[in-house]
Length: 259
Image (cartoon, rainbow, N blue to C red):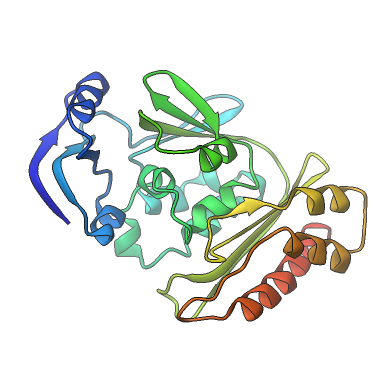
């Protein structure tokens, strides 16, 4: 990663103005994922002075500032109490503690990284993203959005809901990227199934979710879920094996949340 300038914004309006000055300006967030991309920038914009590093109980939602570290997100009692703590569990699977102390939840989501553990888990919850200037969209809408959102992600709002959940990251080593990751939740009598790192970004298996709600057998639902996804080869794993283990863990997830 190379940058000509570093700019510490004094307000969201200040940061947004600087962002619009050049297409080669970018928000830096924690700076870890953006470093891996190896791109060049005119100006990197820092949001660390803007109070976006708080997790707040705002009634029906938990409002998570975009500059909250993955470690703070992982260990927050507020996050652990949402639907069995699936989002906390997923965050805890990312690299090591030192990495999670620096990487931010906003950077992890805004980048729409195919390997993201938190995106897969959060897809099975009711999540709204807030951007500056005033703009809101669900996490699923954001993942399907064509192009880049011209705004600054300020918070991730997670609805407080009870439920049961299952999260599995299949990996070669403890600190490795996922070969595939699977999230299943059951909340308000509805099932949610997400599979990511296929190696494509996570998405919901809509028909399989409907079948699960109708009480169909977990093996049948898992087969339906996997049929809704494309899988591809990577250096570490073949698409057929990726598909097979994803089906196994979707089935196990459905069985776990139904206990």
